[in-house]
Each structure stands twice: as structure tokens, then as C-alpha cells.
Image 1 (tube, helix red, strand yellow):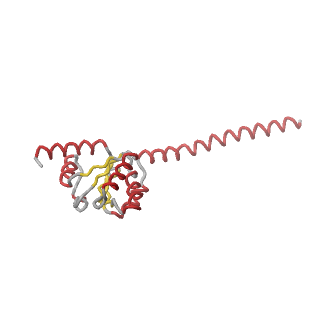
Image 2 (cartoon, rainbow, N blue to C red):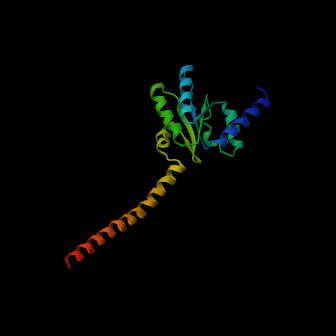
Image 3 (tube, rainbow, N blue to C red):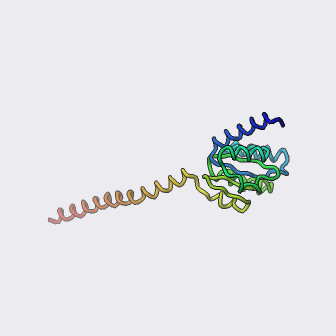
Length: 172
């Protein structure tokens, strides 16, 4: 491959890295054409972009984007398929579901919410991780809960006091 072609591919990978906040490095070697096609179809349904690139080109794109590649040295060996997503746990769920029937893809590493996860044993952790938007929603729900309780108590208290006053006025 010519040096110019490599630089074009690296810049395309850089653009993809910048447009997605999370990526997963997986081993998909051993899947036949039908299985790869099914995996790509599932990725498209889940707003996940799948790329199969040379590890060295991907590593250079990571370095150009300021992502430390030393911890990924072991993950960037053999053939790799990269799954890009803006939802942190979507690729992890896809990997788990798809690998039940096919034993592949296998998680090598993931970069999710600006944290690095290395190794297949991190898959369960990644499945349960919440995105920033989900965490913000949880916090807002927790903050609204006490306010709703106070408003509810005041409303029910008001009707209770009104009922007591009405009963007392009817007795007189």
C-alpha cells in the first residue's frame, strides 16, 4: 500500500474517531461471510459503525487524536474489527448477544466515556455501564423526587386541613 493511501485511510479513521465518543476493539477472525454480514446488519440497526482496518493504521489514528496506545498494545495484534458508537454500552450488548451463537466477536479492548477497558473479562462491566445522559437522567430523577414528595404532602395536607375545618364548622 502506498504511503499516500495510508495517510488517507488514517485521516478517515481520525474523522470517525472524532464523530463517535466510544469504540470497541474486537477479534472477529473466524467468522464466515454470512456471519460478518449479520454482524454488520445488527451494527447498523444499533447505530454502531463497524470498521475492519489494519492495526497499525488504527494505532496511528489514535495517536493523532491524542489517545494513549500503550495499554492497547496487546489488543492491537491479529485481525481487529472496530465498533464505533455514541452509546457506551450498545456495542457491549451487541457483542454479548452475537457471540452467544457464534463465539465471536471477542472483546479485546474498549474506550468508553474517556476510560479504557482492556480484556474480554471487561464485557460484563461494559454492559452495565451507563452513559452520561442516563446518569444525568438518574440524577435529575433523584433531585425531583424530594420536591415531588413535598408538593404531594402539601397538597394532601391542604385537603386534610380543609376537611377537618369543614367537619368542625358543621358541628357548631
